[in-house]
Amino acid sequence: MALKGLKSTILLAKPKLVTIRGLLFILPVVMIVGLTWLYFLNKPTSVEEKVPNQLYKDVKIDLNAALALNQIQHTSTKNGVKEWRLEATSAKLLKNQSKALITDISLIFFLKDGLNIYVTAKEGYLNTNSNDIDLSDNVVVKYADSILTTDQLHYNKKIHIIYSNEHVTVTNNGSLLKSDSMKFDLNNNRLELKGNVYAILSESPLFSKQLTQ
Image 1 (spheres, rainbow, N blue to C red):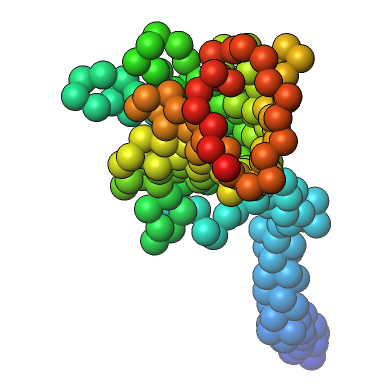
Image 2: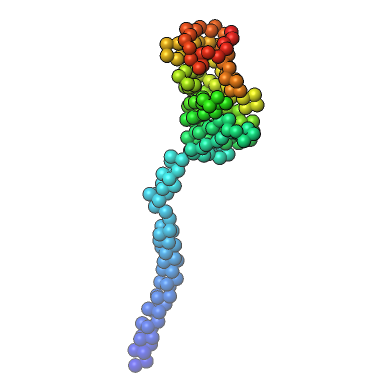
């Protein structure tokens, strides 16, 4: 009986020893498997990782612009009287510069005689301090029945004139003017053309003004 009891004790002891050793071996394995599972569970999928790139794919950051605006309108007055009004589809205020880059521009000058001058251009710059304007790319000026076209046009706020140092062409119902430069005084509606002036004239509000070469 004693031998049977001893044998029984040994048989019971071996499984206990084997179980402890097994746990000591299995526990690290279980921890490694668990940590691996947690890593892959929380790791973003390849599709999720691509989402940020897709979101910013079409976003363009202009490092030269301090502020970008859409559909702006700006009116300039003097002594309570409107001198001109500018509209543009977009404007970018440039960093460290007192000017804004504007596009698709529509500009109206209000003259003392009640007539208006209408100016359009693809792009230009508005000086936010002086209110001077520089226009370029397909500049068109309309006054009464006359149309002036040029590559560039400038407005000087202080002396209230528009001028161009580029070749200009003016048309009006059978009349034609061409010159190397021009200046239009908005204070007295006086047009000056200079440099290689070519003219076929007829009566019109624009052509009746004094011309000088």
